[in-house]
Length: 566
Image (tube, rainbow, N blue to C red; front, side):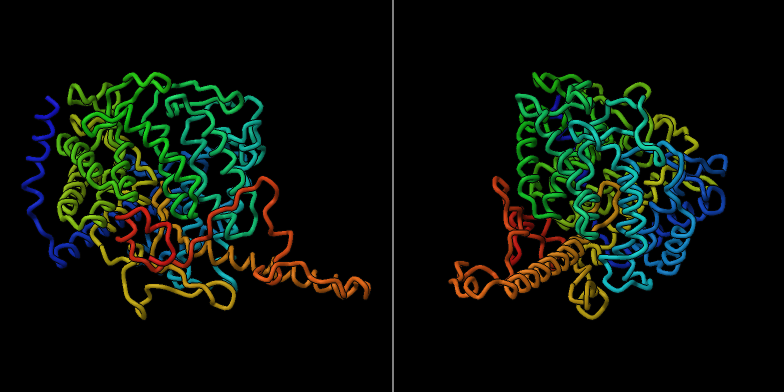
């Protein structure tokens, strides 16, 4: 039966693979995607702002994740991706004037990080390209960066646990409630390293990256004897409350951040963690290029289902060069899309149908995200056809007179009165980037046409030249900015150490000044104990040099993302 299913999928896609999109056709699709975006975006502005989200069936708004005007923050960098610099500038200024994080609101630590902190960091890094007035020293300073830092500091009390693993919810004004449950999902513990490391590298304050790393290392120590992690954990006792292991809901972005964190930070520790997990995942959860849910200690199948959130996995595999496996898994997932015109939240693999009470499709981006990565890696126009199918499905099923509505039930296309902010932040952005292979976020463009920009003190850094890393909310982060600000911080520290050493040497007695210098000849000038390794401390991987390698090359061979001279 499984062999027949695989053959059927390949036959289903064979007709699609022969299609080829011209530049004119791709440009026409991009215009359709822009039209989709502005229908949703303007509907939010006209009917829902300043609430978090639009309710497209009743044409009003609601607060969902913390009363931040969340859709506006989430959609800000999408405006620039679509080329609208004027609206980007207007909204960035508006957010600075209207958003306040000193509010008595219980907020999801996970969602606030990926949507608010990630969205503000991305907008900050793109501010120069958007033509905004920049502070001297940008990207190491700026108003959007300060907003992101302010939001992240509101989350730090959640990390004050005996294990370092954070609570799932925090009150932005009062911290963690004494009655807050200590149980949170795996992704809620391990999805911070991209945003928090970016904050630390840009601001020079290590508290954010340290918190994220402590949580990652604590979670790593809780894996089972067969190398798997469960779905929900008690952050105080480190006991697993839900022991289902898989790659979908509650776990997904943990694995994603190990890979993307390894690339962005050039961190072999994170890559080693993922490699170990991946071996266990392939051994225990993979069946005919589907990934099932298993018991984390025994490896026995607990849920033979596919979850829509798992559709990110082929894209993640492509980042590591595992293209054959990624393509086959993507074909499985796309066969489900074609069956329903979207991905149901849960899909029973043995029955080939939706799971009761999990038939909805809230316009998630994961399958489109994987299509974008796989097209970048292979150049196969099959993925463009899949993107066009997704565009037409969403237009046909979800469009209302007031935005786009989540699908409550894919069997009869009944709609739900909600348009999540990730529809503008992720779904539309990935669709547009899929059909724009020369976009600057892919490393497209040539010298002289704005494909890169200067930054840092005295304009000494090359920024925006490629290699952007998308957080799990599709907010692009520029690794070159992290290196730029880290380098300036290190230079200032070394200069301070050198001046201190010289001033101390000038006050030494004459007898001491004549003693021979025992410092090795190859030690860099100004090297001091303040930047030497402490006993037992491991040397960290070198910072990422300014990336100029085309994005497409970064998707093919693992070694390339860890090399400065390839």
